[in-house]
Length: 402
Image 1 (tube, rainbow, N blue to C red):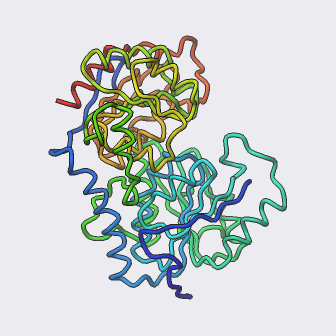
Image 2: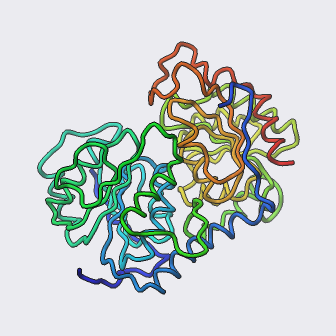
């Protein structure tokens, strides 16, 4: 086994990028952290623990690739598994899709990020080409082993085949299908059990022989320090030189799939009612027309104005995040901010609800679309979320801020 020295210190990263069971209105709630300020410190401790363990153990497993090829939220959920791998890896390379690259750059313990669009994962895949395959094979040459992280509806075998073609000598992944010679460590799980995604992925890392370092609680975390956005948000909110922590509510109306989206007009009404209830409100997202409509003249509109790291900093300072089952909900969990989760049951909340943070779950989890994985709602009227009211959102925010 070849040993390598990391090309960048732990805590720094670089990117190798290439183109190419609640009814509506009934909430379930986790325990809130005892002190609002504890979560950011814990998140920083996770990064520190990963780096400390890498230094103490001295690596020894060479260059290890961790792969999660879908969206930003999924990559954030891979954080505990990534930190486990970093305890023994001399260098940790993260393979992400274009929608997950920015999240991979935020993960503690990642030394380098490779971006590659997987045609069996991407929502709008391009045709498979020899050039596309050759590109990945060339860029993962020299990897000593790989830990492939997937959801229950994804297969690790296409990527395992490409890594074998690149000469990667050891590959670990979940596979209930016969993998032949594609996997050295085949981790088999009972897919009928709804295990939270961070725990599912951490189990894969453990099967490969990696574990979390002492002092790491296994929660989500982001790389520190985050950008300093206090002065900008303070100016926009009209609260002086800087916005204090826990001084506003963030509403994030966008999602990556229409089936997971609470109606825009309900978001707009909730913003007005939150303001009437005494809250300052910040609206975030990438769809500027949507954020402008939702914010109207009642809230600060940050639509299209933040990177993912800056969004993490905005959410970290908030009392609560209001969002669907989308990446920023997992970003909130990673910085310790409670979440009002407008959760469409197209995927199980037990697997993908915000992990390890106080949460109020809204939405009919037994709706007919439950478990369908639909990106566009298959049920007329979108009842799983359309029946949630703005009053319920305001009540949930009150519950999490008291």
